[in-house]
Image (cartoon, rainbow, N blue to C red):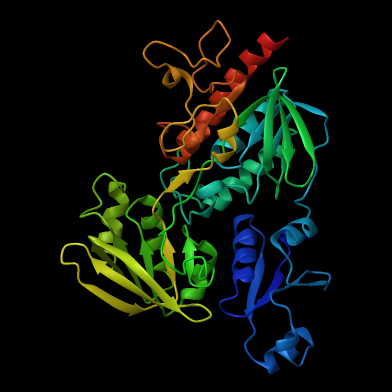
Length: 419
């Protein structure tokens, strides 16, 4: 049995940031593991053979063969599980940045149609969709499926067709030279491709509160935090946000927590959450929804202990005890890399593509082709964008997957021009 299908053991102390990051990575890659908290010397001796827990560098990852890694990085564990690879080719037909629904879909269609394909992902497969506890409106799955399941199946499918997926890596610099994209990766590797697709999605939007970074992974979590749900038994947890991701998170946590309190800035779910979901949330006996509210302060010691909530109608504030705050308030595009290129972005940072590049009947000066850009093509010929990172995209997993597949059609057209 390989490591991915074996039950691994992860030991840590409550509130340990690195423990959360490892739990999240393993959960998103469908790796079976057991989380064991060690908070006294006797437990430490029983599980690790070390009598003094103060001498242990937590977290500790124990593999099936008994090997233990003390305070490993996510990359260390990913490497041990066989997820780390290097680009095998000097040049690819298409390079895809981001392994969310758009990037994985593009990889499946590109590789299955014979294009040499590489996917670069700086964290885990699935993007924000990969953190969702349940996606119920994805066509073909009437009972729904988790974002991790969807992403892992797509990853296996892309690999089956011959795509390469490079995890724990990202591009730090990209240059367009002679119709190719030359990418310098953070790990020192270089990569050249005849075309590329940006599917980097969006990064979680933050609350922008004092001490937020201090409590990240120590009580403050972005997204659905599916790996944390079993640790919420008997507790009161708070979810910030009013869209589908927040609603699904609240429903998931309600299976474990004593109570889930949703904090929503708006006055209703109208226009932000699907009808089927807000009816479930509104009628659930363990979910309380507070509209017109926001979090204004975070407090604690080594981990989060209290949050301050403000009623936006009355300006009244109250401080409540909690050790779990999940933030699902949308995101912002991950496109800072484009600022030194000819790729055009809108005011919010999303990539402009196709007809959106036309301003008063004119294309950007950097566009040198006689033809107009293809629908998903950016202002640099042969460079495409798909999914949430694109200007005016529909923020749905199915739409992102569709755009990824569509982008490959345009890649084929561009590569025929390039011959």
